[in-house]
Each structure stands twice: as C-alpha cells, then as structure tokens.
Image (cartoon, rainbow, N blue to C red; front, side, top):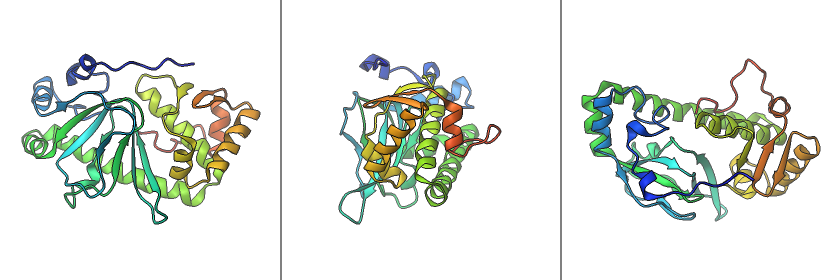
Length: 252
C-alpha cells in the first residue's frame, strides 16, 4: 500500500520559491522578486488534523487558503439536515474565492487528513496584486477556472450516468495527482465513499456497487480506500472521454 507522508513544521515553512507546487499555485508566472513579496504575506501554521476546519459557512471572510499537503473538503448544509459536498481540494488549490463577493463564506472547509495549509490574508493580497500585474492576472485566472469547474460539474451531474460520473471522478483525480508529482495509478482516497456519492449525486450503495463492478471488470483494484488503476483507457471509455478530449477538471 502507498506510504503516507508525515508532515512536519519544517516542511510547512518551505518558501514559495522552493515549493514543488509553485507552478500550480499563486506564484505561477511571478518573478523571483515578486515571489519574495508574496512570501511576506503568506501565513503558515501548525499541521491541521482530520476534522479541523479552515472556516465555517457564514463566517466573515478575511483570508484565502492554499492546500500545501493533504486535502480539504468544502461543503454546505443540505435541506435534509446533512451536508452537500461541493469539492475536494488537493495541494496547490486555492480555497475561499467564493467569499470575495459577499465578504462571508457561503460554505465550510474541513480537513480530510493531516494537512499543511498556507493562509493568505486577502486585504494584503489585494494590495500586493494592485502593484503586481502578474499576480493580478493569476488571481483572474484562478477565478475564471472556478467558474469553469462549476459549469462542468453541473454538466457532469445533469447528463451522465452513475458509472460515467464515478469513472470521470477517478480519471480526474488521477490526473490532478499526476500534476502534483504523485502516482496517477496508485493512490489513497482521503474521502469516504459516502462523501464521493454525495459529491456526485449518487447513493453510497451505488458508489460501492460501481467500485465492485469496476474491480470485477479489471479496471481497478480496491482495498478500502487504497485504489490501483489497472486500465486507464477502460476508465476513460466508461467516463465517455475520447483520447483527444480533455477530461473533466483536467486543467487543475
């Protein structure tokens, strides 16, 4: 089984210029001098444990957050009294952009596993971006990406079958991990099957049945939360992805 990384405070303090995620995060496209200015804004704290929150729905907006290691789930209360999962965020991804408009968070963000998080006070980031066109452009790009992802998610839930949704989710997760220098075929799911089903609009029983079916058909092997993809072309076919067509959320 894939070994889990141990997070230390020294790892969290790695500067942006030395971080392996700087090509996916806010420093992308910035000069060395500009990255140093951004580093002076960013706060780095102790590792957060599974179940801890970055912020809660309705909380006043003061910072954006970037996942450095680990993963985070965003969710909102559902009408049935439970929760509706909005997304799973991997290293290098920015969280909290939705709060800029109304100045409060419309969802909650909870850590799924031991994670290191970079906090960026928005007022200081805004001041810095006004003087750094490259940083301002990167913020616009990230905001645009957020809009595109929401549209793609609506299309996924509205037009695809249950097997297509789960296959597309696994293909997307594989590609996102690959962009972070991690294995695309052997990985640990930090989210539960219930959370995956909630996100994809599927019953947990359906998710479990589809995992069993994918395993029976030799597309992947599953041991609890440990997944090995045995046939990426097979999963892409199930997801309705053609070889020359970008898959869902491939750009992350």
